[in-house]
Amino acid sequence: MNFMRMAKHFATTHRSIRQRFPESSLAEIKHAIMVSEQSHRGEIRVAIEAALQPSQLWQDMSPRERALELFASMHVWDTADNSGVLIYILLADRSIEIVADRGVCPATGNATWRDIADAMRKHFASGSYTEGTLAGVEAVSRELAALVPENRFKVDELPDDVTLL
Image (tube, rainbow, N blue to C red; front, side, top):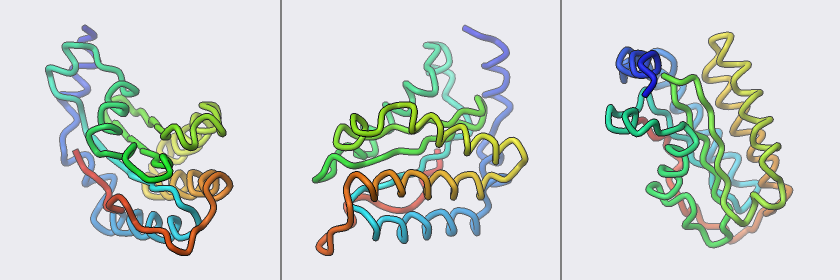
């Protein structure tokens, strides 16, 4: 157990999310997801978490493990084309994880998602959380448009709202 990490998580509250992502930002991100999904058959979800729970810290859960857990519990994997993508932001660890379903991940490779997360981190480092998240949504959307192009009969399978944890 890392006591410094635990202290960061205890100090990072839900208020931290609201400071970095006010309601107007969340609405802008939701709108970007809705618009982007018109250009492909993929589904994009964004989840922002202030900090992990003490039990998760005690188990030394990594941001990646948490992202995979949320990918399943939010049913991002449950799309007709297996084309769901989760952008997970863990503020206390300053971590961004992108998890893509089996219908798109093998074609892109992990380096693509890592590059998108790195670009988002650069925005976040300068305090531009909304811009960084919008850039991430746009980059993920470009990948999905190349892999699972638009279908005029597409149904929105997952909510476009940003999930705050």
